[in-house]
Image (cartoon, rainbow over all chains, first blue to last red; front, side):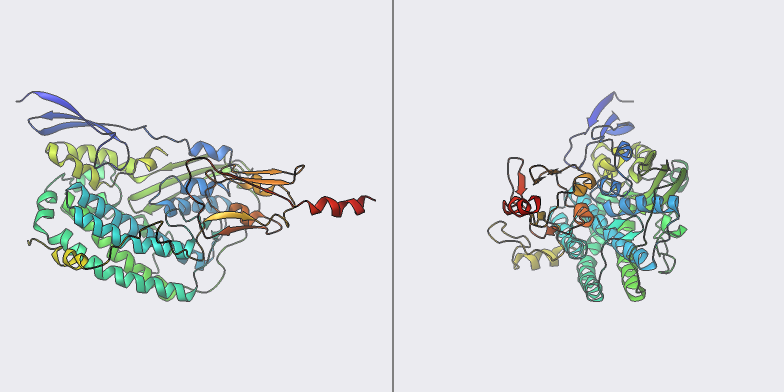
Length: 360
Length: 124
């Protein structure tokens, strides 16, 4: 048995886009234990519900995270709609689903780029982000914002997409698919990529269940856990099936994300084919009544949980968001146990950590 | 397993133009819907203050007495909340961004001086 040393990892580290700190207990280059600590970027966004009207709070909630901003906006609107009993028009649900899936595509491509950067494949990183740019351009064209869309509102959406632009979305996605075929071939088959990912940070199905892993982390361990199956949006009409891998290592998590990009492209194409005409927003009158409501949303990183407590006034009494990274931190700590010090950045990256989300 | 899977794409991009733009030498193409910055058609503004109350970041200031409308550009998040709330529809979201700056830009719009003249005959 070697001597135990504690090595600090983060909050500033080249592979971490956001600050999280890990104390790594090391014995002969092997991680024995990892102790996470968060709290570097808490902004107190949930507290703002007491000061902002429920209709304006959407713009604040969207800013919880820059990557899954649309998902957070949708989740918040969904919980308020549930609280107030608002029926959302079908076209609005379709548009929300299209934007949400586009967000998933851009989030996953961003992650693939970050992962490539993490294992030192710089040209792959650059190409991933070049492809992602086309999705951001689509966002700018359809919503007006490249990262924060401000397009979701309580009762529906603020902007419509006309038939011509919907066709353009499909054309752009076809172009992206061609380039992604090459990129995904690199991620799935390349020797040097596999060398860094296969067999690293294994999380078994039982561990994933016990530690309540969510999203691609759970699905890579063979757990068919996806909130899109539970009837949010119009996923039922699109014939959605979750992507599942069984190995539970870093490679499986990367493959799940690669497959989900292609799946999202197919879902958007189907949605564009069957999107109905009609209203894009329901008229919302009055204030959220007294009562509580919870809802769940499948963000690109996994299940997010929204809770709202109305007070029969235009301000909510309490709002709570539990984000996917928050749920995945125990799983990450488990994965880190027993891995090499050199593999720690990859293992941390494969849960797709979003610390702004976690701390809000 | 195979190596150099990205080879083709890398070779192709060697002979292509850069994917990035030489901003600001080459100006950016704005989309019609781009939320760039808020403009106020001050002649139509009635200084009701609804936009000020609706703004999620408190970036707007409305002074009814001085007939001035102020926007703190760095605080504005371009959510278009004020544009939707405006009863006179004098606020618009233009599709160009404001110029970058090291200082916090505050733009003030003051109603043209003709209005008091128009009010004088009414008072008589």
